[in-house]
Every structure is written in structure tokens, then in C-alpha cells.
Length: 422
Image (cartoon, rainbow, N blue to C red):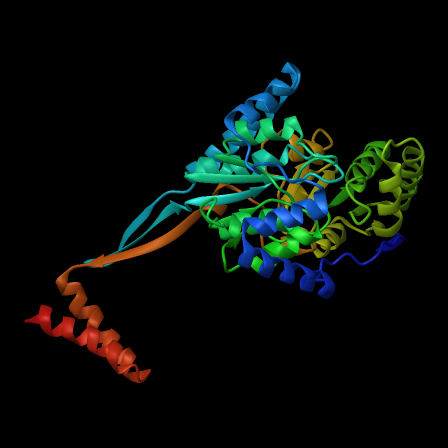
């Protein structure tokens, strides 16, 4: 491996100062409920409406402000997400098997009752995030989805976001941002049903709130700044590779980009393309910081080394700009979502194609995938048996319990052996 450009270390870790601050906020929110929500909303967002929840008429008004083109495009994107979520659900089937004579074991998939969906605002009004947590939850059969999004600067809300939340299937919509929104959804505060799962991306305070609320409820995953990796051989177009790297770099000054090339010539061409495109990029103020501080450009000696570098990075998004994509597809194992060939790109996955964009970052793709319909289902097991089977299993169980000195457990087995043997 040859290093062309080395970026900084990006492992997302808990900041003790942020953790302490969020902990104190959550304690205050738990103790004082909606009064504390209003205090924090006024303090951070200058937002204190009569009601944080939007009425049906307010939602209709927001939808009416959206252009016909926006409404059609949002419907196109959401239809793709819904189709894929339904296809995923179709792979999840109930199971029952007779494991031994007279012993039946099974599992079934039960949706959680309530999901809290956070749709971020901030630097970019990412209204497309609404469908990524709301639609899979509703397809899974979740009864209630409570959705929160922060107010826009100066107050109010972004109509496209409200439209996306409503069309995705949100049952209740609140304009509240940050930690107060997470607390409202997690605790309920007498206003909504407490969430069984919190879902959605946000800033470091939202991520820390999710971390601390885990246990009170479930969470989708903990995500840091976004990231992309690209594996490109000499058949690729350096201008297109550079374009896709910068497409992620504009997210955040802390976004990560990794490009693994198969020749130094291609790597140098890509580096020049990045600098050329940065000079005219509308969001260069952010992208150039991200590329400068966290961009990585390597040359691998072989395809297998390229795969090893990518798997070590375990990227959120991974693009393949290579002549033989099947070789990589069959060997790569650590990524959040894979984009095969130059015809697709991360933006398609983020916005419109149908796969989910809530994905693992900071190397967590080593052990988890992203949000999908199964995230909102509990796979629970059951067992039943005949009396004869209870005798044969009970005899073994009782002896095992005795060895563990759990004699009350043993008794529960022996009383059944005695009852059904007789």
C-alpha cells in the first residue's frame, strides 16, 4: 500500500463534556416535562409556539406550500423506500419446527407499538430522512410513529419536511429540536405514548441523548459524521470519483472520505480532479475542510489489499468503480451500504432509490447494518410439547439443574415428570 494523502482520526467517541451536559438536560426534562421542553426550545431555537404539535390544518397548510414537482418527487422517493421495505418484510417469516418428537419450537415477528422518529434540520433541511425511519416502521406494522423535527431559523418549519413526514405515515408531528425532542419521544411526558425505539440522525447532542436513553427505550444505532469509501481501478473516471468524494465531503467538516486506487497514476489524477472541482463547488467552504482534514487517498498493490483497506475502514457508504465488481462484491464484508458501478452513487441511496440512508458510521459497520424494516420487529420465540415429551425433557433438565445447584428449578421439572409419567 502506498499513501498519497492521509486524513485525521475519525472514530466517533463520547465527549465527556457533551455527555455531562446532555445528562443534566435529560434529568431536567424528565423531572419537569413539557415545561422544560419549552424552556430549552426558547433558549436554543427561540421557538415557543402555543402547541409544539402541528394540527391537521397546519399540516395541510405546509403541504399546500410545496410545489407540484416537489410533491411528485417526494412521492417517487417514498414509493421506492416503501416498495423495498415491503420486499424486505416478505423475507421475514414465522417459524415452527418439531425439534424432537412432541416438542415444537417457533418464532414470530411482532412490531413494536411506538416509534419516535427524528428528522434533522440544522445546516441542511434533510426532509428525505423522514421516509427512512417512518416508512419502514409503518410497513413493519408499528401502530404509532411520533415524528419530531427542529424549527427553522427564525421560527416556523420547513414545508417540505412536514409534507415528507405526513406522507411517510407519521401519526403525530412535533416541531421540536435536539435533546428535548428525544426526551419527549422517550419519556412521553403525558403528551405521547413513550417510544419503544428512537430512530433518526442528528448532531452530537442528539447522538449522545440516544446513547443515554438506550435502556429507557431501544435505538436504531449511534452514528457520527457521514463517510464514504471508493475503490477505483484504472477503468474508472477520476472526475466522477472526485465528484462522489466531494458529494459526501459537503455534509460536515468532520465527514470522512477514503479513496483506494489500484495505481498511483489514477490516484494522482483523482487528487488533481478534487482540487479542480473544489475551486468551483458551491459548498466548498465545508467540503474543503472535510477533505483537508479527513480525506484519505491510498494506492493498493492488489485487489485483495484494496478490499482489506476498505474493510478496515468499514465505511458507511462504499462505491465500486471497478472493471470486475463481482470480485469485490463476493469478498467485501464491512460496509453500511454498497453502490456497485459508476451508474449509481451515494446520493441515490440517500434520497431516492429505496435503500435506507440511516447507516452505521465510525467503523460500526464491522458489527451492524443500517435501519431496515426488521429494526422495528421483535423476533420472539415460543415452545410447546406433549406430556410424553415433557417427561423425557424434564428428566434431563432436573439433573442439569441439580448440577448447577438450582434445586427449585429442578423441582419444576420433576413435578412434571411425576405428573405426566403417572
